[in-house]
Length: 151
Image (cartoon, rainbow, N blue to C red):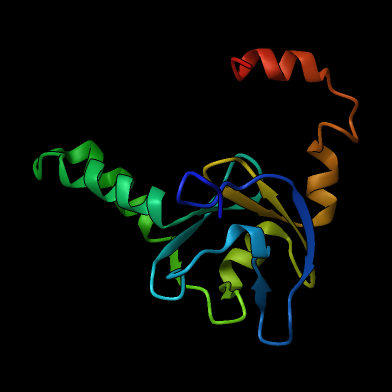
């Protein structure tokens, strides 16, 4: 846990699924109470990864959706598409999460994973798909990336 009172999700971590398709979340990314809190995972169609929102982001998303008009047809359609494919879960006491077969299939994951931090959330990749986009492996210009991030 960071000094901010919530975890920050940075770095990349190679992890293997266990025999029950459970993935251990990196210990630095866990916090007291995350066994009761809800994470939300959904397939990321643009990357072929699994996008995971931690409880703090799930709460903000719920507030955004609750603020929308019930008669907003476009928002209702977006919600149907996103949440029909989503999976909610909590960590067990060992920091493991269960992932659905549909999510694993979408991401091309059979055993090995790369869990990649994005500061406020994280993605779960198959190693092959991650290596195809890994900025370090692809020698992308880190200066350009930092400029885009406003750093």
